[in-house]
Amino acid sequence: MSEHVIDKWLDSKLPASLEGTQFTPIEHPTLKGSPLAVQRGQGESYFLLDSKKDRWVLKKLHHRSKLDRNYLTQVAKQLPNIEGVRSGKNRLVLSQQSLKGGAGKYTCSELSQWLNNTLLIPCETGKDWASVADDIRDGTPLDKDRRIQITLSLIKLIGDLEAHQIAHRDLSSTNVFIQGSKVALIDFESVFHPSLTCPQGTTFGTEGYSAPFIYSNGNPNTKATWNSSADRFSLGILVAEILTLHQNSPLSGDGGLFEQKEILQGQSKTISEVEGLLSKISQSAGQNLRRCFSAKDYSDCPSPSDWEQSLQQPQSTPAKATKSSPPPIQATIPSLSDLESFDFDLPQQTSAPPLQSIQLPEDPWKFSTCTHCHGTGKCDSGLLFRGCKQCREWRSKNKLYGNECRVCHGKKHLVGV
Image (cartoon, rainbow, N blue to C red; front, side, top):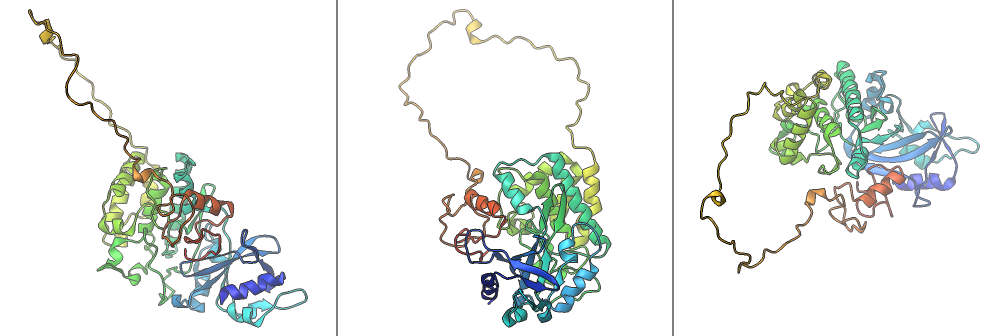
């Protein structure tokens, strides 16, 4: 239904007036005649250009999300006027009356009905953290100073929201955009504020970033995330990723470091490695991450100010050596060859078979190609995986960070993410 409606609008080659502003759909860069679109999370999104050539997203939420118009409208009103929340603060909740006709304007009753409760959202600039992480894994460096600046920017943003009793509730690698040394958030369809009622179809977060204590018998309790501190655990995971991710880091389904099963267990080889790397930056930072995995509630997790203080402390350095005492006197120990009459020839040959030299395969975690197609791009089934280097280069070239189909890698359609 959605694709059909937008296809007709694209085919008309006419702009449509939405809430008084002219918009046109963006054509897919490789699939001529098809709109540029992605599908993930709670809805499907179509990319538009306004009359100033600024990008917007037209996001149609799935019926199962059951997010009512009042909730969606109130979220924008509750968000504070701070940097980093523009896509939530300036978005519009459209209605059937949002589409205006006129000379040279596209209008259609089918599109008008489809627009009801659809979100019109300004696009953020930069790259999502998942794509920046892909670049790091592919060998593009991100220096330590900039990592710390990005991390402090994210910490400040979450701290400002928490000070206004607001939680995003779905922080993940794909919802945090890197803009130089600043960050911005997208996808404000799960926001908590005391004045809002928890929507029936709201998400509990994203796997790989969800707190272990919200699970009971393997199932997440969404209502356990309905509070103003609900971003603290996922903030800790993102801080660890931004500060420590390197070229050989493992890759989770959403592009992060940890699988949800690791988080539920609270310990793994990757968790231990990341804690160690964080401790080299600041001992209290490593301790903060351990607090996240040991927490029984969001209040046990480090607050934004805890993280800020840990990164303002001096870098951990090896303990200074104490003043050493004079070296002990060492006696010379004679060898057998120093003894009298010790004189015989060592055998020059042996009857033992020669040792064989073998070449061990490269460690599997060092491979950067897709585990399914191994870099050929010939996947024949969908994967909860960010794909091989070839897939990621295609995404970056077409500015579709993390959203092409895991089946066709963007050659046919952009669904199944």
